[in-house]
Picture 1 (spheres, rainbow, N blue to C red):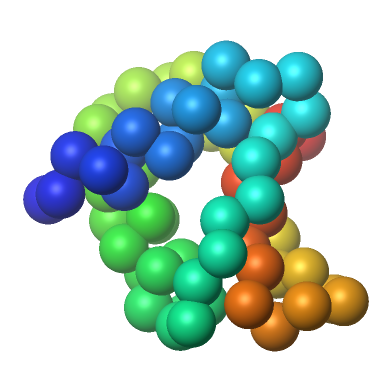
Picture 2: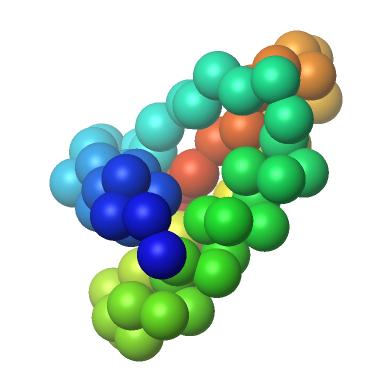
Length: 65
């Protein structure tokens, strides 16, 4: 699995509230992010959620629960 996906999870974890990611394919990005989190088996990442931006179809958020 590409480490850049896992880097996004850890960037969100280190931020105050989460991060916003620009993408042209939210569904594929979401699938790859979930796969990378599952492979990491890091319970700290369970504190984060993926959310599709309701206002912009090119944004995917990783936010703290």
